[in-house]
Image 1 (cartoon, rainbow, N blue to C red):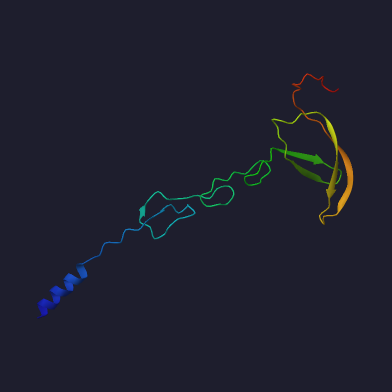
Image 2: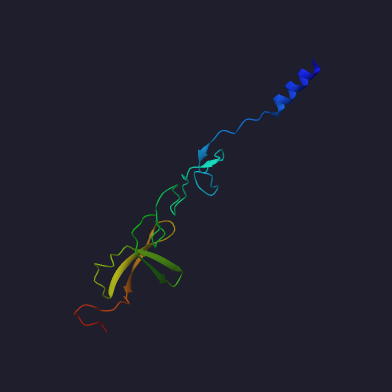
Length: 133
């Protein structure tokens, strides 16, 4: 009887179960990482520049996700430096020196008096018009 109990104990403790197969993303740097997965199924996704898991977003030059900003102008004002984001169509816009009136706003949203700002473009004159002096 003691032998039978001993054999039973040996058989019970020597048996092991195989772990269950869990498919998923095993890359810890992926945004859909599955800590329980033990078989990689190539489903890993990564966060794009806009913070979307598996997305394809791209930041434009102005730092806007999937935006269409193509230029950034920096003005050196007497009090501080202000950045103006310009949404210009580089392939269709006629470039020439121009003066515009800008209305700036303070940190509370109140308008500051409009000032004339002259933009001087530094592009090659490819039109048939003479360059301005």
